Length: 335
Ligand SMILES: Cc1cc2nc3c(=O)[nH]c(=O)nc-3n(C[C@H](O)[C@H](O)[C@H](O)COP(=O)(O)O)c2cc1C
Image (cartoon, rainbow, N blue to C red):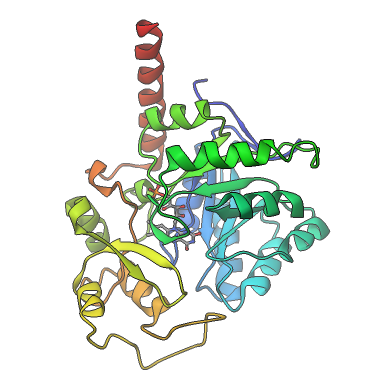
């Protein structure tokens, strides 16, 4: 096999080191997550914006669709969400394999993971948080670069960030006995990129934008068409109400927001712990999922231009492996 197994711990492994990034609202649902797990990767349901009952239904649906034990099922949840802890407990009670969280950092959640014996993996973008996460008992760390989609914690590129964080973690090895998996996220588009990340000492990668353009992703066709026609010049960075910079496609909604025109929604469910109220992010992301090009906020990774086709998840995995094989063959021939 071309790719190594992703070992979270002695008993929890995915036979392919590919995590499908969590994408709210309802972009990464049970159907996509199960398809990824069936290919041996880590399928991720985005829990942010779901009610407890919706999350339970999503986890049950994914488990029903999972046909083998090759991959794993995780949830992704924004720390910034008001019901962060509730949804983590809900997923753990439903027997989720892993909990991944980002958009902020929780120190308390690691002890909840230990209580349930369920691994917790934070998404971090700095050496400081990577070291703290390891110290607090993270079972792995997703290092996310400025090339990612959605909320960003840095402007650094993945090829600079990984060595920086790997070195900082290596310096702590005397203090913390266990070595934990490091996953690279942001801008990884091909099998060649995956090989490069593995060579930098990563144990796997997280990819998100690629999986929006999959047959199994349950967003409206308009969302996928917008992705296919978008180029890097169509991407912008905006200040999200969460208090973080985010990368999105410059749609009418984004243009209005950037021009200072009113875009705030009348309805507010106080879904975030802290919100600037510049607009309702839950509604804007929900509109995107429904394919509303005028009112939707379409998050996207910086390398969107590299994708021009909708494939099944199985075809995506096969393509990544083919590209990885090719990269290794070329490298071997050049030696
Ligand atoms: C449409 C979309 C929605 C996203 N939503 C979330 C989210 O809810 N939580 C999160 O931690 N990251 C989110 N992200 C970030 C991804 O999970 C992932 O880490 C990142 O986009 C990886 O880079 P790539 O898209 O270049 O592969 C989102 C990304 C996209 C493209």
